[in-house]
Length: 113
Length: 113
Image (cartoon, rainbow over all chains, first blue to last red):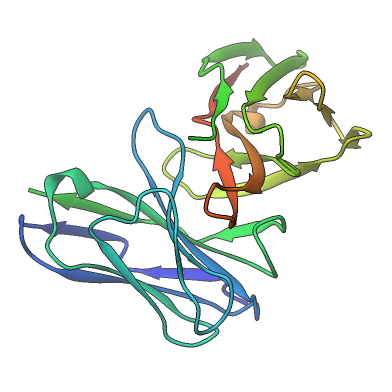
């Protein structure tokens, strides 16, 4: 039982490049989330998916897109990376809605130069 | 924007000491409350949920004061392994009508031998 897995662990992009961050959970959770964490800031929600086939914007969605591929997988895409998107990205899942405990993946450290 | 405010610390305490953290939340309609623990360069992990009646888990006690909109965490008999950043979290409905968690920026604890 791996919990929440994320790939890649580290990534360096040049401004304007695109990439997709992958996330998968094996706990049969309904809800999945993408957060970013910046120094001096709390975790901020980018997008979330309450169930397979649905996605909603969080606090900071600009510059990102998501896909809930199936119940297990939730990907985050940066279409045209900007230096302001340099951050640590965490994927999380919860059994039901956000009022339930969220389990986090190990994170992806992204640097955009 | 809904806020959760915490003293960033660091709190440097000797082994065996008792230490208390407080945080305040701005959304009076918040319904769920948590303390997460985050080790350096790791993902957040749930330490404990916080209930209106207060709750205890071993050396950890959490309290909620809805009238004053603050949450506390008490750690007794501190261990070296308690060194981490503690994130205060409040959950409630956003302006868009979706349920979201708001994370504080964290309080750093260092337990010294």
